[in-house]
Length: 232
Image 1 (cartoon, one colour):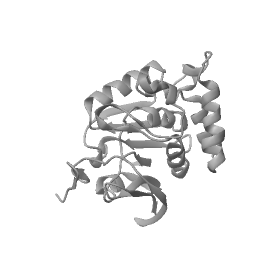
Image 2: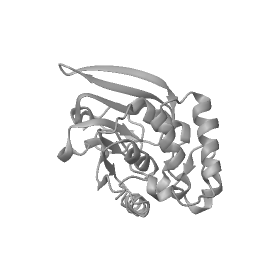
Image 3: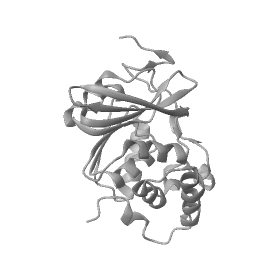
């Protein structure tokens, strides 16, 4: 039985040409080169993860609003984060912020197992239904505070955070395995930089910044609460 998203898009798809143009123009045209990331972006049906009113714009070069004041990120930003994470087929990935479930589906194509945490119950239910409809079985979803990670299944090979934090939450670094990679937007409420943290032997860390970005705030005990940074 197929456990990833590939089987769900084998039937004729009227949005296939738009998805291929997205990959060529927005991703490959801007320097995204990782073949498995490009393959995943070409196969996962983004239009199924957006509000029906926005389906005609699903493959455009922009973010789109979703329920509860959240967004589905611009395709290029999603692809860039996936490429920076350097996900390999055997990897176990922790995703903070399931949101629409679109990046979750892409991760399911790239990794062996995906664990995703979402704080908004209605978003979690909708994304679960969409993932199940696509036949994706290698994803575990949980309602909770993403800044605390998901300790039960740690350590993880990769951690991806889909919302902006004022700093890297301690729990997410603690739950990253040896030589693991964490990708997260860090900064203020209006603008952030995409950061990549690599765990090195001896609990040393390497951090690199990869340009400006803009995400909704990461809300939780170790990030933002009601627009304010928490200090607890």
